[in-house]
Length: 162
Image (cartoon, rainbow, N blue to C red):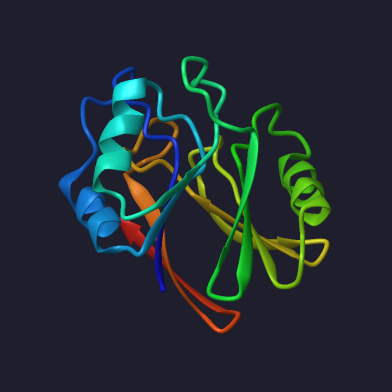
């Protein structure tokens, strides 16, 4: 199973559109995870329209969207716990890892956003993935996302950058 993982699109407040290559990655994925900050209902609708299936959460810029703060989805034998990570950057990784651990069930990975910075790290035995900003919204230096291949509880993650 191929999973497109993105966050912090910030359309239209910081960027006008999603980069074409990001849209292509979403179209080619079996499932898409968005960790919040779509920034508008139109941005959400455009991503939902091209995604085969979508798991999405509310970011701090998504007040007009009726999305959960935390969502879980089980794919290929792994539970993904998705949240934006809203709040101070102090203790960000610990705060996110604690939330992931509270929703864990078997092999579990946390997906978060908010910082606009790529991350693949482990905190307190919890793997955390942050795809950065799919549009390169500041402070990101360029657009980025993650593509995960998931099968039988095994996860391989590849960084895609524009």
